[in-house]
Image (cartoon, rainbow, N blue to C red):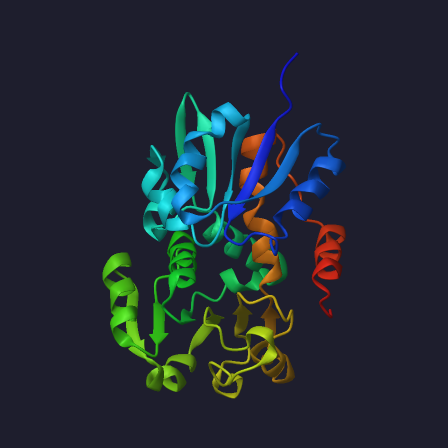
Length: 280
């Protein structure tokens, strides 16, 4: 009798993760006799944990803070997304090898496609606010989708320059002082900073300076409607919250481990919104 497929999410801490709820919903929906569990793994034990995956019966799993860069380094093989982003959030075993991907870029673009499909049609510039780890996934997503003018604005311009040099043609680096000018002809503005997280902090950019047809996205999903998104909506702009990115980034891993490509449905979104105690 074949063993039931098993997958995991690991981090330190991990109790906050909603991944078990997401994957558990899909396992039930598609009537798959498998499991997806959260495992708290301290940094010093992470290497040993990865080496034990096959013996523990895991087909693979997700990796979150603080293990994403370590997972990238310890994998036997890395795909293009993981290589460009420099971190891995999805692992799977195949032919005795540990493979790594990063599905954050996929999740971001898929969320935009679902919530604001018009974002692909303007051909205009994109402004990325912030140059931290999350912004690498956003820039990779935009380059993969053919955006030719990506402007990264960051308080410390050296961090923005690092991304500019890493991603090359079509990517420019700017200080936050340049944001008003950068916004004037941008079709997409993405906040990757922590401003607005938990509903506090100044706005990372002024929606009043944006085009009437601009799409405004925030990768934060607690709160679901950040002050930045609220201000953009008041201005009449199309907004996209960060929850969909979380849901869509889970799709490729589930398909790898359980053999079914799942759908991101309104029912799943409502489940996670309720689980997080968010206001729609």
